[in-house]
Every structure is written in C-alpha cells, then in structure tokens.
Amino acid sequence: MKLSQFKFKLPESQVALYPHSFEREFTNDDGTKGSFRVTRRDEARLMVLHRTTGEIELFHKDAKGNPVEGQYLDFRNVLDYFDEGDTFILNDTKVFPARLYGTKEKTDAKIEVFILRELNEETHLWDVLVEPARKIRIGNKLFFDEVGTMVAEVYDNTTSRGRSLRFLYDCPHEQFKRDLFALGEAPLPAYILNGRPEDPKMSGMHVRSHATAEDMENFQCVFARNEGAVTAPATGLHFSRELLKRMEIKGINAAFITLHCGLGNFTPIEVEDLTKHKMDSEQMMIGREACDLVNRTKRAGRHVCAVGTSVVKATETAVGTDGLLKEYDGWTSKFIFPPYDFGLADTMIANFYHPESTLMMSTAAFGGYDNVMRCYDLAVKHGYMFGCFGDSLLIVD
Image 1 (cartoon, rainbow, N blue to C red):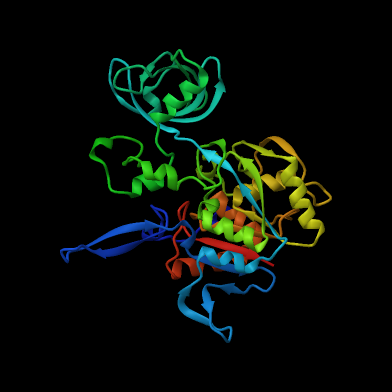
Image 2: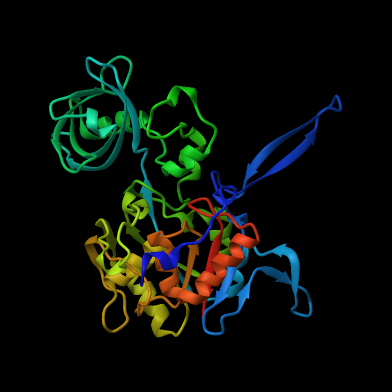
C-alpha cells in the first residue's frame, strides 16, 4: 500500500492534549461556586467495528436494540463484548522520565536531552537524542542541575540527533538512576507539549511547554511494572483499577507481556511505498506464564484480545506457525500494514491515531483498510479525540 492512502484531515481541536476528564462544580459554604477537573481514564469514547459484517457501533442501544443518538459508548463498555474465559493481552512496560533539560558548558546554551536506553551500567553510558543537535559535539560537557553535580560528557555521535552520553556521577547504579530520573519529565510526545499553552521560558527549545508531575502519572498504565519505555502503550492507558477489577469479576483473563515502546512510533514515514519503510527496533519479552494463558484461551476457542498496537507487534513477532504464542526475549522491528495475515489475536483495541502514522496502519491491517478508514471518517465527524490520550476503537469479528 501507499503512504498517501492513510492521509485524512484531522482538526487540531481533536488532538487530545490531556487524558479524558470532565469539569465538576461545587458550592462553598458562603454560596460561591467553584469547579475542578476530574480525570477518568476509562471514560473516553469507544467505537466498535465488527470487521466481518462491517457494522460500526458508536452509541448505546435502547431496550429494542436501536442506537440512541448522542449517547456514545465509553471505554468501560469494552467488557460487554467479552465473556468468562476470554483473555486480554496487555503491555506492562513502564515509562521512565526520559526528557531532561540542561545547559552546555561555557556557553550556557539551553539543551534538551531525551534519554532512550542505558548502554553500560558501570560507566553510566546512555543512548540519547539531543536538541539542538548542531550545537552538541563529542567532548562537550552538559549540566543538568543548578549545583553542577549531574554532569554528562558527549562520548560519541550515533545519528544526526543521536549521541552517547557518559554521566560523570560516582555512586551506586540505583542511586544514580534515582537522581537522574528525579531531574527528568514525563516523555510526552512533542505534539502534545507544542499544543499546550506556551511557557515563555521554553523559547527557542524543541518543545514549547513543560510536562507536569501529573503527566507522569497520567502517561503510565496502572499495571506498568517493567521499566524501559520512552512512550506509553497508549491503549493501555484507558484501563483503570476499577475496570481491571470488573474484568476479574467477570472471569476475563489478563496476560502481561513487555514491549518497551520507542520513539520510532512517532517517526514520520518518508517513502510512498510502505514496503521500503524501516522501523526502529524495540526490546520485548514474552514469558512462559503469558504463553500458557494465551494458548489455553485459544485452544478453548475463546477470544484473545490484543490491547494496543505494541501488543499486536509483539505477539505477531512471537507467534508460531501453529498459531500459538512462543516465549521470546529479544528485539523486534516488525512493521505491520495492510494487507497482513494475523496469526494470534482475533480481537484488538487501538486508539485513534494521526494521519499516515504506523500505528494507524497497524490498526487498518487488523480491521481491514476500508473498514478502518470508515471508522476514522466517523471519528472525525463525531468529534472523537485522537492520539495517545485519545479515544479508542475495538475491533471484533
């Protein structure tokens, strides 16, 4: 397929800059009114695509089974499409505060460092991206706090924006990571930070606003446990603790795998022919416990639901020719786009994503290109929100 086949007009007002929330009003003892915002990650909208028939559901139904216009399904309704014995596969990667701000030695020029992964524990060597890259050269020292204790030296150039940094910090490894991460911010995508109100102090920087302390909580799945992601598995963000408890009560299983989501998910595709696009590699682990649970579900003829495009990528990397999930510990650079013959999950949940994104393409491969493009068209017309904090699409047979 061609890149241009995934182009559509997305209004800026429908790009979600914050997680789903609503305004709650209250009255003080003196009669004055006030309000505050409440975040409800499991109350974002849900659309449902039946890929075999092409039916698309947006609304709740009345007693006669007729859709009630204006009463949109929300994510909590996802459980209505599953029963006891079905299994959700969830990505339990944990996002770390990867975006740092500092200054360059001598010039005090402001710089942004986005840390990707640790290369060597003993020498505190990290793979990073820097902005503005043209000013950061091998041998430069970068300072990350006002007292000058957290200092890094540029060790090597890796790509046009990529560098290897060696942190000159003499302490045990765990203490070093705590101190480093304490200086970092939630690694929200640049489109979110650039869409929020501008911070004058960020003038001239790659992004125009700071992430907040609340962002670190909101940009983390409630079941996250294996640290290593620099962006969240967005569909998993919709699951609240209450929703997980409802799953348990209903007898729906949760199988956890790990894929450390990287920035390649946001890298623009620069070729029209999708077969020529190369994905960045991401580290993934699938253990015996997850394999046993998923394979029991398949053998019993129950539904296996991949929660998010990262889970689809991981499971399609590790599925065998027999249609069963295999243990895996390594890396994947799998790029899924239509047409694609899936080997494991029979249902999928994914957020609505930006035009021409690899995440949108993965969704279209699962639900069928024409079906998913109709869903995207309806999502735009009905005011659904897009992106990491956006609304979601459930694809069932």
